[in-house]
Length: 566
Ligand code: ATP
Ligand code: MG
Image (cartoon, rainbow, N blue to C red; front, top):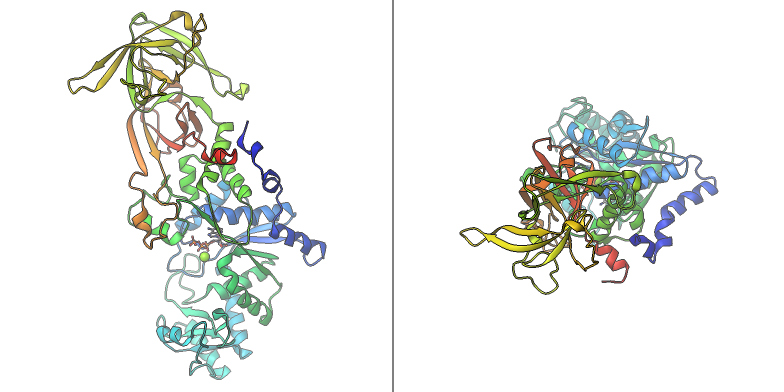
């Protein structure tokens, strides 16, 4: 009865065809490409997020499907923002997502020497020059969409002077920002990227890999396509914001003696409702302490999703379902949640946990006695087995499962009402005990000893089934309930992403009680707390100090939308 069996666009989501795979297939068919080579090129200036997962699944997926290979290449051309911590996290997260680059781990910095040679090649060909124009002025001189750029007075420097200055830039003779190397292309080009783009800038900064060997660094544009060519990448897949860079990408490939001719193809970046997928913003959340760190379970980072209990299979399935489009759009968060539930529903064992306990005393149950019962671990998977649970005179139920003055359609506990305790007995509420402040602290009940397993022998109807734990063996736990980090479906639409933060994105329940079989649960292992949702033990959880993160609640709004239920 899974939701996707009713999905109307099942065919579209189940086949893996899209315009990129069609392109790859036609390149193979036409003999333009023999071995498909892709790459995932993260800049190690932050942790990977769900948007990157789309790119990872695409690049590694296409390579695997067409019998090729995918490289992991660190795009490490800006030493100021890049750190070893990020490099390590990126490798860990790509592996966790289920992909393997084998021996093909590369860095743009591996090619610094080659890139430098190619820069000299352009200078010698009269296609690059050293410009001393201050940055601000240079920017102003680039013109606008309606006005052509103006030439720098250094544009026609002789080749020998350019070579000499560029070598002295490399030798460290000039301070940061004093000069740049620019390509000499077309100052009137409609595409701004072709108006003599910067190829190298002076940056006296140590690099995580090359140390202080360099004080000039290539720009993204000068490094990316050439790195692709060096690695014999056939399909350089990137997000749409690079579309305007493609003519420049091609220009370098045409004008340099590169060993191969890669092609760039763009696809839509992933945007997700209620979610910010921008490293710049995510870095700010961490820096300002808005979240606990990059792996805060509210973060859309792979590290955060992992800690929250989202299985990598759900992320891969989600990416498959959204497909590859050429136009940008915003994906409904419910679709991602649906993929998570769908996966966890299959894999998570069921347990009982009471998040906000209310004591229930069964007056006709013998004091000190317990009753052994059997609970099933997974309703659809008999191989998951069963476990014993122990019923006693004092148990706890969920506070919200009781109403002293029941609202209409509230079928759970209220004075005089009979309900079923899951796997156990029918109980009837006889009396409500309150403290001096008038708050309900305890319910006095009776049980029907003939209703073992939860069915009345006379077949009388009982509408509600409640989860519960026994007072004598329940284990205390902290439970963290997460909701979206943003209260707006389009965070930052009003100009300030921080104004859209959800102040209630985390609720910590210190007094939860879980059944004893959860005492040994391992971090990362998924569990369904019956009627509550999917949870996993936090990495900080240990026997005696259990901490559970709610991965996701049970309600599936996407399945409802798909079923036409609105
Ligand atoms: P951000 O915009 O979050 O700062 P980025 O593009 O600067 O991300 P990179 O490390 O350069 O981050 O990205 C590595 C690869 O992941 C690039 O090919 C980029 O196009 C892709 N990518 C980044 N964000 C998304 C996204 N939201 N959806 C799909 N692909 C993405
Ligand atoms: Mg980038």
